[in-house]
Amino acid sequence: MHFQFYDLTYTLGLNRTRQISVSGAVASGDTLVVKGHSGSGKTTLLRILARLQPCDSGKVYLEEKSWLQIPGTSWRALVHYLPQKPVLFDGTVGSNLAKPFETRRLANKGPNPDKAGVYMKQLLLAEDLWEQDAKTLSGGEAARLAFVRALLINPKVMLLDEPTAALDQDSRRAFHQTLSAWLEDTAGAAVLVTHNNDYTGLNRVSFLDIGKPQGGE
Image (cartoon, rainbow, N blue to C red; front, side):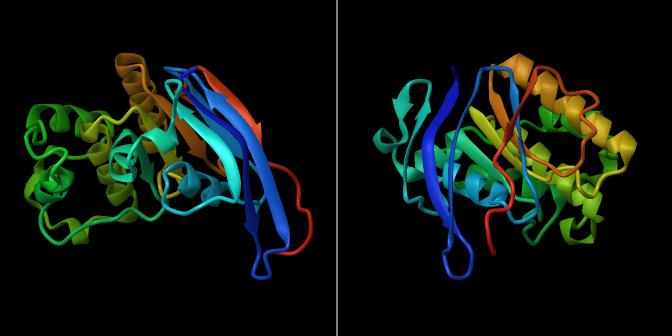
């Protein structure tokens, strides 16, 4: 298995009244779709797996190595979280794609413009967007731009929170096809949270249901 988590326990609700305990695994090249009602803790699970917030207990392994053995900044480069609301920075689309490569870990690599162009084309984004102000993009364009940026980082695991919520059917299919191709090419893995039951274009999908309502939020 490529990415595994065991008895990952965390507490939800304003009064911290509801405890969630979940285990799951996703192999190289596969997508694990996390299902559950609104407020069931799906986004919280992704944020914990990305080490953006703590859990109460549990174990997580990446290629049989415990997350406790990997520094947080290194972990977040290997296990990349893409939030539902895409993060865009001031500047052009091109400068946004280059932003992660300003960090010390990626400074010597830099984004590959040719590869970025290929991804943009696959995701039905116009090639002339490169010099456009990123803040002028539509919601769907911004979501796909953030995905291109994540693909260029080339993590081991992609944590995707409602990535197609702002996309139409054609763009959603293109997103799934691009994700599947990336998984096959890189032997990466994906954990996907979505309310949309359309998985057209996604290959090798498994499902994890984190449960029914158990009291107040």
